[in-house]
Length: 478
Figure (tube, rainbow, N blue to C red):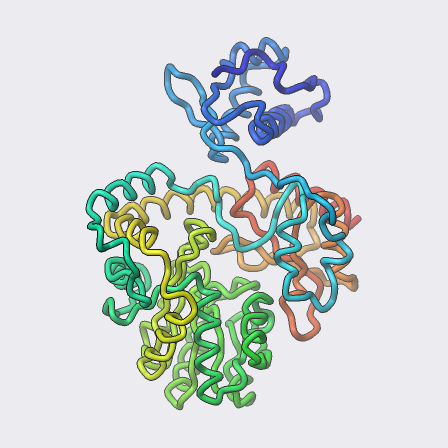
């Protein structure tokens, strides 16, 4: 199927802002793909023909097509032309009752369903943190690996699996974290879970059963993680985070028996746990403290070398958790944990009674991809794309929000910005959503008062959307 001329755009390029015709055209093409006017498998008009039809230079069309290539929506197929290969995610039409209002979502004390509400609310531009470039999912490699796995499965392999996870994936994870995180582990040390969220819930359940009533957390820290701990009736005393990471002296003074950390790329500030703080933390753990290490965003590094995982230094005092959510897709719901031996049997039992173990087939496919080297190739690919989007966000912030202080730019999938001013970041986020831009207020992730700010994800949005979204924020700050 071939799109003929510009009729499918249903607009005159005279509507485009001066100097931004390529952005405008890319946006119109993106909408046409999203609403089905350009379905997957269809071929875009030749650049020369579309340029003539729109009465613009061929360079405008070529640049717009390149934007769609970078977004993963189209691909050049040589003599076959430029073909639509993936459609942007569309928000389904809402039925009564409609989506919650921005004012309802952005409240000082967000409820347990706040992230579901925010995800389900339509917006032109989504700058929510914690999501990678979903258009980059390696569909072809996944399907190829799935066929290979299926061809080698026996009938018995379709039965119930080991609640700890498929042995092949547990071995692949052991190899993966040895190569990428410097962690020495056997397959028997690895427990496969439905993402870090489930792993945290299972561990919290076990710790509660042993008499632990609180787990200290960084401040600021992930609201979602705190909600999981609160669901298990665990208190979450806040421990200050500064430019060197968590304040270990304050942790010691708190008397908390355990602490949840994101040391490789702290959420949401992006700081890395410094060397002296690591040594202080190791001494605290050696005296009996338990570290829960969420290896958040460890794979996404741009301007700094990797830092070693805490688990690699003191295994029996560190419960380590990782997942593929930030470099493949959250929808897979595949993560892993390495639990200190004194808690391992109880956590495995909790997993068994929770769901009898993750689905086996996706585990085997992922194991094949990890052992074949495909995941390293995928990471190299998405790092380049995420870095370009990060750079686009930084450039836009310099232009439209010059008073914002940017945090955590060296790694990850999000930036945090703060302001030395008195205003409500909840109202700021609500106003942005009213203008069609999704962001998260920093205050959601803080237990104690801090400067107002926003947490801005760049992984899942093309550069043009990022620039437009930040421009909206800039207008709101004027």
